[in-house]
Image (cartoon, rainbow, N blue to C red; front, side, top):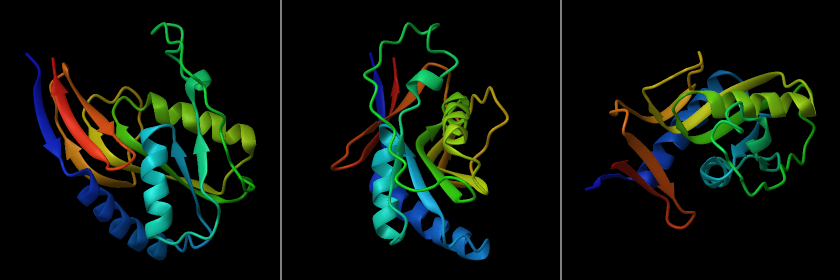
Length: 169
């Protein structure tokens, strides 16, 4: 029987926005662009873009073909085009995803970003960071950190409203 716990995703987005505003101010990242990873990261990025009144257009990445576990998982994803309506070269990038788990999605996203140019910096923003890292990747801004059992996972629903649920099978 599945067990469910719910986190307040909308409240977490507000917390991330507050912390990200301070983070960008302290590091003088006024010209930063927000890039969300499809699908959940794009939803969160859209919220942050609006809340922080970022001037650069919102960017999105679909990293399915960049994943190193693409063939192992037998994935047949519906690939959506990436959309980076700004020059990546020399720009500070705020890379947004919903959940940081193994680090493989973020590695794939960085590989794709570098195909568009060499950013000045990449700062990782996630709604939730959980245990189970396989690569040495960590967030710069995180809404909530969780320790979950291996059989548990986090599911973000949305885009309206955003919901965040911990599920175990």
